[in-house]
Image 1 (cartoon, rainbow, N blue to C red):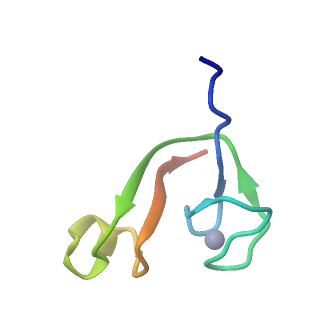
Image 2: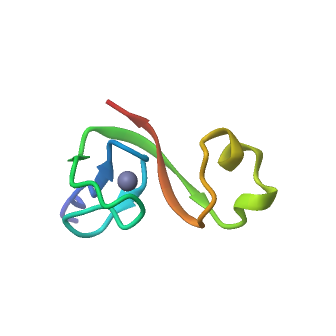
Image 3: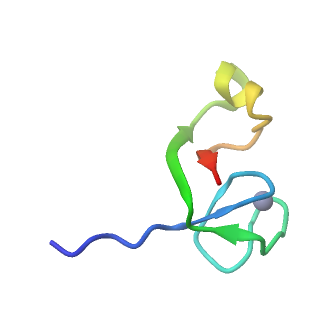
Length: 65
Ligand SMILES: [Zn+2]
């Protein structure tokens, strides 16, 4: 099995980004140097989403270097 390419993560808001720029904040300040991600399904009922200031469902990196 070929290793999967690490997706980019926005340094600004930690959102996992599929394209060249962050869909949430429009930043192109992306990095592949991150670890662990969280899938936020229901941000209104998620303590960790509140802690990370996430109010839109999606994937968010836990640690961005
Ligand atoms: Zn962003």
